Amino acid sequence: MTLLTFSMFFRRIDMGFLQVVRSIYFALLGFSPVEIGLLLSFATFISAVHHILFGYLSDRYGRKPFLVLGSVFATARLVIFATSSDFWMLALGQGIGAMGEGAGAGQPVVSGYITDKTEIRHRASVFSTFAVTNALATTVGSLMAGLPAIFQRSYSFDVIGAHSILFWIGALGNIISLAILLMLRDVKSIHVEDNSEEAPRKRSWGVIMKVSLVRSTSGLGQGLIFSLMPLYFFINFGLGGEFLGPIYAGARFISMFSYSLIPRVVERFGDVQTLVASRLITAFLTVGFALSTQQPVSVALLIVIRVVMSFSMPIRQVFATGIVSPEETATAIGVSNFARMGLRTVAPTAAGYMFEAVSLASPFLAGSAFLVVNALLYRSFFQVKAID
Image (cartoon, rainbow, N blue to C red; front, side, top):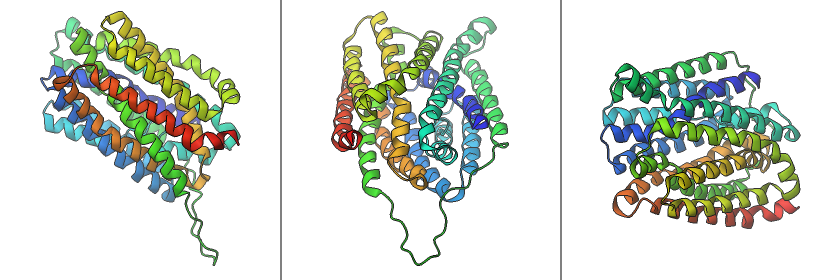
């Protein structure tokens, strides 16, 4: 688990700066909001396929091969970004990289590995530990989002060259992550061939489908809100990675301190009730963000929204690993992630179209509505079980 934690730490660094600079970098290259949305949507679609495929296969054949593959794919994306600014090559990089976005504890292969290695009573602390280390890595990565501006100002690089250096640094981090993974001792999946006359155990497809429906609304809502948020600040206030990087880093750093409250909050209110509350609070804050016209207010709301969403992440991960048997964990998370990412696929392109054809506020208002629906579905499907 220590090796996995360190490996995922280095993988999360590049996710930290990509979430800030990627859409802004694409805009600086001259792509329109719709084209940027298409690039992000393509990656989201491939990521959805990756979740269900890697989740199912890792249940059958073990976790380590797919952790290693993910690291290789994540490295390849950054190499492509560093060597080309062509739209189709960037799309290729997006697709390849999406097959490597398995660095979080909520990803099917990582969650499956944790489930194999830990007893259920210890998982809350394990997922919280992963959340803290991921937050640290994302904080570092977000701070690195300002490096291209420094390279341009201090060393006279053009916009492409400045970002290329950042992408090469990220690739190096992924290579370190891969080296650590190669030392990892795999844990064989609990799945075994049943050669007895006893009927094979049926999967909990009813529960899995309910979780998938709930997560699909969350994916669409969060995609509309977060996928082009850096581009929103770039268009609306002229703010780039040099400014937004520390803001995103600050939000992730603050979220680390909130994780210490999770055991007490869940013990008092339950995991489902806490998830419901976090979704409703996020929706309310997002409406305020959409209606705000002042830069300081928008920045403050951005920080609070990201902290609230990050707080609920370990809770959802523990919830997801506890509703099915251990041998179904990666499959269940893979299927539900596929549903989440499947609907989220349309979000960046839809948000880009709304930016151009409707208003800059419209994606955030639509996303908040889907988060309310998500909260209601959590309560409807799982509140009774939580009380029991």
